[in-house]
Length: 79
Image (tube, rainbow, N blue to C red; front, side, top):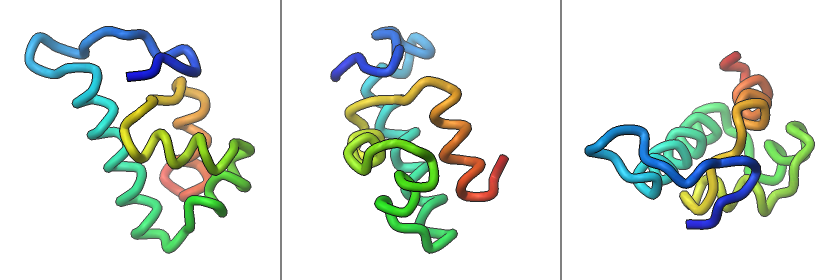
């Protein structure tokens, strides 16, 4: 897994790996985006990030820092 955007290479608990955390977070964002009928390109544009950042996050390759994740949630109307 690629460390990027300040994501530390550590596990959240003894039972969950960083890769599993990344997969879960990416899946949640993709599901929330789908519920709101927002494309990845639209989310990226509205959040001020690249479409690649959204795609990498949803694929579980990165976890963005809290401010970026919060921006995704705000764009989708969840925060």
